[in-house]
Length: 490
Image (tube, rainbow, N blue to C red; front, side, top):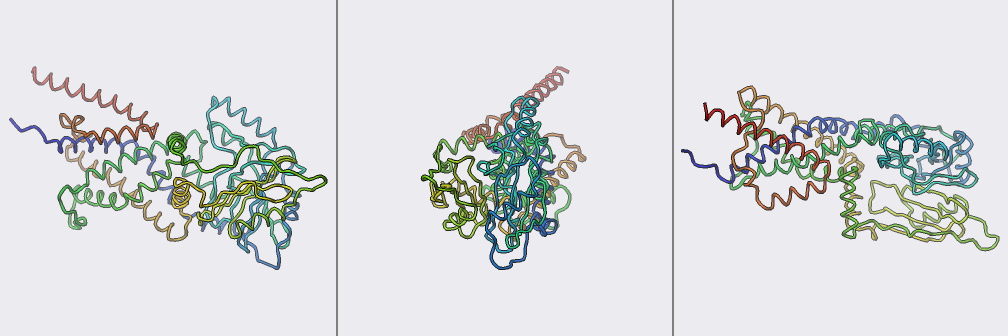
């Protein structure tokens, strides 16, 4: 009678089994995410080629007052759309971008329709996420609020449901030469390559309701990474580079492990930052962030502008100059007041310079600062995400893009090589699933159970899918025990 398997052997069989399930669930979506991510890496170059004539200008003397540029944009804006915000770059050769949004009744009707279709599911704001660096801060920047003088009343924080998100009326970006005041052209708010490629990567060009696929993939990739690290861990052995002479499944296994471990630190960073802006896991992360006092500082509610008798509100240029005294070297997104007592909300959008991040609330009459948050006031969590998310998007320059491209290619190799190993094992008569030794589940240490509990709580889609797989495992175990009993009786 053979000796029972050791604890390490039983534990290894469990991690191999979980690693396989994680790969089975994650691979289809992860391969798509890696391919679309590789495309997204080249966004700055593609944007420059496609939209350079709108984004870039030739400096010629002094820029005209901002109110003149806004007025020029309003003259060509689609009828019924209201001004949302204005994006002013600190670069001398960048155009000014004036962003208009759909009229209130169109947004309200579309949101109501979507709520019915999606049963009130939450979704992302109408304004898109921030674009890649080097785009002069185009209209992808989300506004803090929307409004303008002499324009129909705006709608703040309008959201759509996941089902109807893609059917909402879209806004328009008007590009203006700051030196001549000439309108360079207009563009649909969602028609930029950066916006298209981002939506392709995050939801495969579907509504927000499809983002669960990428979140599910990222959750199981995290499990696959952690179990892969455990399976590779030397435990007293010295790990060398893969043997170049190795052939067959052994050679694929060596390179699969080597590439996976070589990318592990970056994988953790990419997966973690990706999960922070996902829906379900992101909600859990944000709840934890708030619970431990790491929520980003926000302006107090009820801030108002106060006018002295007969005092007129400041024009766009005066507000811009007031903001420039605090943030002279960054791209600014200026959102005007909603009404006579409203305030100006100004945010920086310089993704390549997180330390220059600033949020301002200014009085509409005096230009005085009512609220200000800079890098020093950000929480540790806020600083980490301010660096991690632009890194995830490749916004720190060519070196960042090259690193992400190598990473994406490595992820593809790691995923595909795992399936090559599976095919070779199957062709050699191996089982479909890695064998689970008796007592494997009881071999998991307390720390492993705690880590599993943390992951399941942090990633709800992981918990839901893991429950389904647990049912499958129970069924497989029952069938295996039944087969052994039949053989024993025979």
